[in-house]
Image (cartoon, rainbow over all chains, first blue to last red; front, side):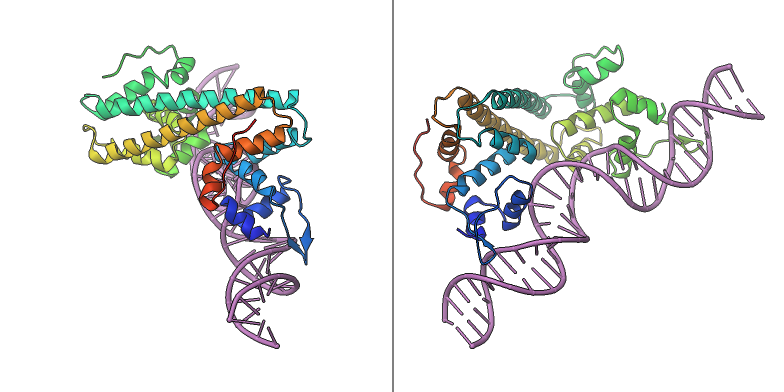
Length: 144
Length: 144
DNA sequence: CTAAAAGTTAAAGTCAACTTTAAGTCAAGA
DNA sequence: TCTTGACTTAAAGTTGACTTTAACTTTTAG
């Protein structure tokens, strides 16, 4: 498979695939006449990279994960640790996103006189509480 | 309040605050002897900016949202639309994160002979299905 | 055979959101 | 008064993940 087809099938640009090679995410493939030829299985690897990258993994993280499973062996402790850390991170993401969703939904339906007041109070009393409270012994009232 | 105190109370660097001014997120404040002096209420605005930015809003989005509520008036249709769009986006984030969490948890406990095979099958059959399926009429089997 | 499409490289460019640097000016305490 | 620390600016640097460009070669369809 040529680089163009690999790119097409994985939804990336050829430049991205070459870039992955330079940063060590993809091995340099066999070449004919100077041009890269990929085996079919490379698709899976690239798709996995794309998925992980869209999930917010950095390319370095992805490299770590993929190297962890390079050896066709059952999952090792290093990989487990990585996975556990990432799961915790993802859980935090989910929690914060749910907070934000709640905040936005509240703002859409609340009956504050002015949105500005509402936002400021809401922010102080809820999600921003952590920031301001750790800095000053500030008491916030419930908004709206 | 001098810029250093504002920075300290909001957990940002002074350079970030000056940067927010240059991009129009913060109004240029009153000055004495060339130095910026902020009123207390600016803290709320900066905290709000920090929160939104940590939630993944771009500074341009934040500017839009803040401009939307600049006029001390109840929430307008423009702002509503923005909020609705953002809620949908956040919902997608939550869903994908939950998928990723499930994937990682599966990988931690599955009994595949090799993790590599497991990942490839999992990826194809679940989360990556969308990518490959839209490109080729590929059928994937359940992993592990 | 030839023209166009697709491939190659190294190096520079892009984007957001800042930070750092250089070269100063201002403020506060001893 | 002097010194230190905080402030000022404009401009350049940083980071990650690519993309674009320029100049060229290889492959493929007609």
